[in-house]
Image (cartoon, rainbow, N blue to C red; front, side, top):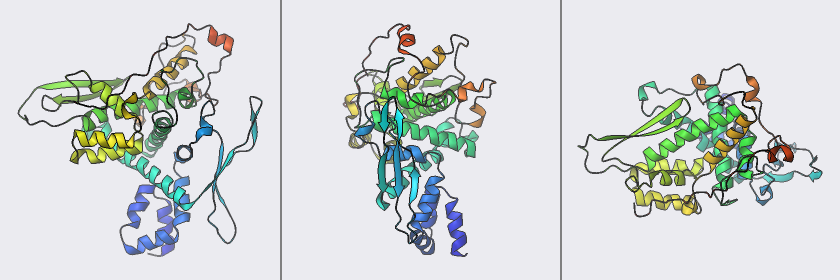
Length: 384
């Protein structure tokens, strides 16, 4: 097959598929290396999560605090003869609340492009694994995701990754849970989403919780003859995820009442780190997994995840702004059959681009103050 045709075929593949295709034989590998920059940039630019991944990779102190998603002009100079530069993001100088906003200029090198490539490859892995996780209880119903479902999933994964790296890792840590109407960086990312997008993220988050409990925080004991079944349930509106455990197959810390804390501690990991844990889990015992988790996640046992609290807080804000015209916000999930199909399209367009609620200080003051609650302490399964 001519090289030109192979190059065009690879341009239409995903990151993970291109990587695997290049490994199939020596000729494919040589073609990929000879056209590496062209192929990588074309494939990456086609991914719906690409811009979010760029923000994650270029996070810096300037993004904290109260300057989330600070604009960047990111470009790559392939040093071509024609002198053309590849621009990934372009923002003009602007004014915001009386301040001059000058976008950061960031020039990528090939190693940066390769790092972004590997991050998107991790997203590809989650897309491939999602059917197994979603239909774990009914594998006969499992199927590949449709194109529309994959787009929703990729966007939800990139939001999870951005939140995890910002607030579950090294950049920003808060001792208290977020409150309604506060100017809070943790709420910023969620408020920028529409209600439907938040629901899709919430649907993914429930599956991640069930997966960690079932596939990471559960050991197989020696007594395989027991028939005692104990169900553990997770529900997100109309989606009910049921995880059953036999007596010999209980979550870590179950009898001490610690299992939920352990799971929510491990939920702080970003998609890349959790992928590593899930891949290593079948061959690694509890001690090895937790040592690995501590190495991948800074301050693992300091606290638990706060993405759940951020999602619930913003959903409550959206509901309050409906002025009691509805009792609950519509559910929407990743799969096409779970997508909201109601007549009110405002739930698809009600994102707050600034990351702040569309209320004045006087309007916010009319709501009763909420109690200040600490972020729960983490649990790294020590002595379980």
